[in-house]
Image (cartoon, rainbow, N blue to C red; front, side, top):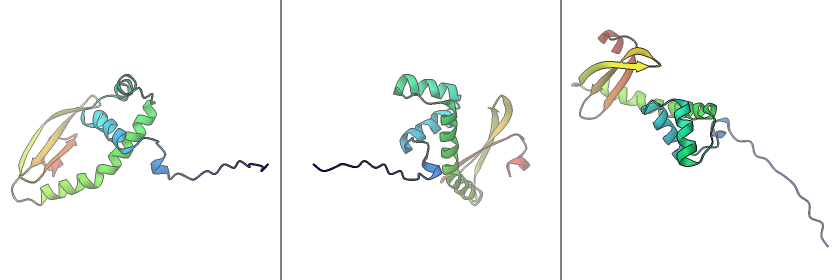
Length: 127
């Protein structure tokens, strides 16, 4: 009989891919955390009750940070496009961010809609 040797090989996973959560789950967590403004505990509860996925609030925050970093170049490009368009519609309204009063600014045209949350309501702050 031949002797069977068992050997384990382990690859190094790049740090940006160590969360263990794929792009669709990450996008969903980013959506319900960021755009809808839900707390990490609400996202955790949703993942557990609807998806049967038990995930820590720390892991949720890591996914949110990763999603946020991934969209920065697109956000900047949208802002650049809005600022370089001759005609824009501009508006601002109050926005609560972590319990503090802020303002959400909108600059929109036929190509893009650019939003920015800012602590100052002045147009100079938006510029």
